[in-house]
Amino acid sequence: MKIEVFYSPGCKECAAAQANLKAAAHEANARVEWRELNVLDELDYAVELGVLALPAIAIDGKLVFSSLPTPRQLRKALNKHIARET
Amino acid sequence: MFTIGKLATFAGISADALRYYEREGLIEPAGKSAAGYRLYDKDSTRRVQFIKHAQHCGFTLAEIRELIVLRGRDAACCGDVRKRAIEKKLQLEIKIRAMKAMSKGLDRLIKECADETKPVEECAILAALEQVAGGAH
Image (cartoon, rainbow over all chains, first blue to last red):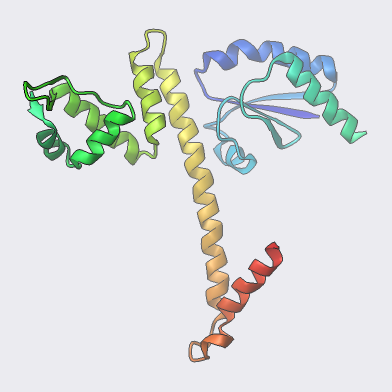
């Protein structure tokens, strides 16, 4: 499973929350691939996914959060995603 | 200090637009004349220019209000403004993509209508549009 976090460089809110979210993601699935994408470097991809607000999180190429979730919300979304995949 | 008419002339917009900005909380008069007319100063001119520039970059009045609030917030930094500018760019890029798709759709329709002399009831463009409308129901 691939999790992509789109962030705007210099966003204090994003930097502070990312470590907790990453830990929560690995807790839900140890094999998760975690990518942090500077939206300015990946603008076309962000537009393709429909990212309108930052930070945003996509799971397996689908936009799931348009703002930073809590670790609990992320775990819940990941568990739901895993259940759908199996 | 000057009147709303003067400010409108300096800024190149109508007095009605300025009154609308005021209702939306974007500008406020620096004072009032003895007769109760709104009076403005140089800061008002700068604020209207700020609003106009932001509008040219695609910001809505509500978003411009947020920028103005950010500007006055001690804890805010340039990164907060930049984030909003990046989000606006994302919105614009998505709109551009949607419009390009529309333009391509029109290209297809224009291509389908090769014979301009046909009567309107045989128009391929109208027929194609009807098909799309039918498919949507």
